[in-house]
Image (cartoon, rainbow, N blue to C red; front, side):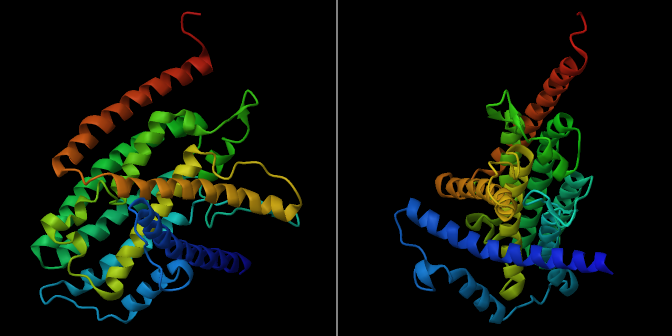
Length: 346
């Protein structure tokens, strides 16, 4: 019974943490972009407009949810639920801090510490494609259908590049567990440089670019190109059903930033000192600081770059990222072979 109680507490904490994070993330994005564009941004609801996202959420909750006459009702309602569910499930395997030891028992700061956590993340990402596809098809309208087809093609294409970018990380660390990958990055090279997987720079860059495409963020937001397809796969959605898509997108932004931190930036690693409580808190602080820096980079790119043309988007994924990923895997394999076995002619 204690196992189920602990699991329930972890899930509830993860849900509350994500909801608060999304509320803050949307506000930060709007404020940061307004600063970049010399505007004020939200400033009415709460101090500095910090409650604006909450006000928008309350409005969406009470707004009428309209279902088109030609829609497939079950799939139309199920699509945003599936999008939200996959986003929440992805977060459950992300360790947000170092394991905590209490009374001789070690507790992981991930809701689930799976030994195949990396494969689990890719699986949830793949299932998330179905939510967008079903939303477009079930709407009974051509513009959502075009948006969903675009989105599914885009996500499948860049998922291939993302998966290939992760192979050198697995080869370098020897594990698929996200906790083990962070632990493999502890320490330093020569006592000076942190032993982070950022040394696998091509993998880092490819994964980050694929992350923009996976989350439909600018300049890869072709699934929602309002100039061409009105609003994309969620054109017919309103009220809380639209809010679920909105929340899922921002949760996925946080997930991608957090996974990037785990895989390439050492996760929770950083200076730890002081009493026990501070030693519990500091790893979480370092993890969140790195994650928010990546999120701010996402926002900066949104404010800076125009939307790509769709044929350029697909050509970049298939003709640039995937070939570079394959070449990089070969180079890493050769380098690891030399490190493990030495030169064949020696």
